[in-house]
Length: 168
Image 1 (spheres, rainbow, N blue to C red):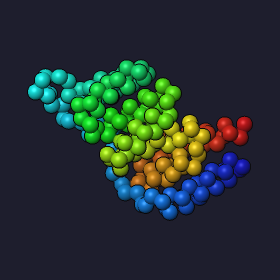
Image 2: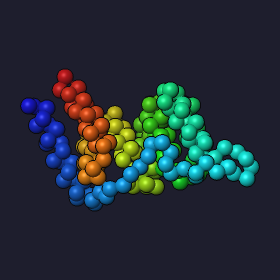
Image 3: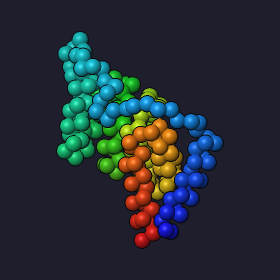
Image 4: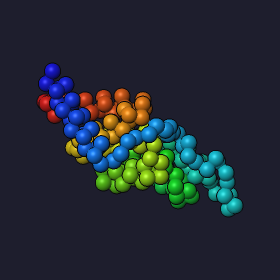
């Protein structure tokens, strides 16, 4: 009961802040599997495409090789500077490597490039929880919920775990 009251209170406070400051969410679909890539085209120099690099990074990510994955995602961004999916995954890897400040910057860039990107919003919310900022994590949850994203449930579970661990 106490946990539910805390979560509802946090959601209400965040909803008010969200409504006052960031506007309404619109629906859209994002892909954590490289959906915004360059369709696998090769450059004139026959180097790997941004999507090829992204896919290599994603394979390393799946194995928990955060540093290797981050390098591939950085290389993908070097080839295609507006690659929102690569920024998102670079944020994830950077967060797992312990640099929340940089990770949050990468999530912000991903969302500037692709505002309706549910996976980035979920990971952004997780980063805020790791930073101890429950209100900002809940704002990301509210955006996901309004957008009807399946990622809302995943972030809500993380928020619930965070609140439960804070209660001891």
